[in-house]
Image (cartoon, rainbow, N blue to C red):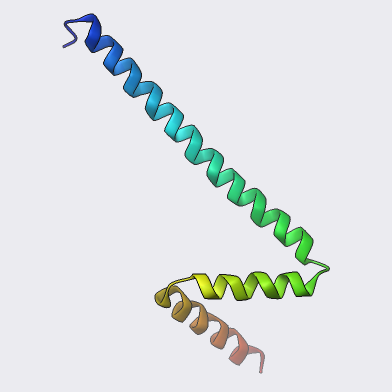
Length: 81
């Protein structure tokens, strides 16, 4: 139960902080999505850029993700051959 003006201000500030944080997270996600889409667009005709992106990605992911990706790639390559 809210008993004082300070309680109301505290709850209001918490609400505002949560809204600001949520908006910031959504903005970061949108920026990441926009960056990904822009990179896809640019890499369509620039295979050197695509190669650099893939190499950087493989260097940055952890071993578990790398192993999973390696399994998927090997599986796909075997299905082609």
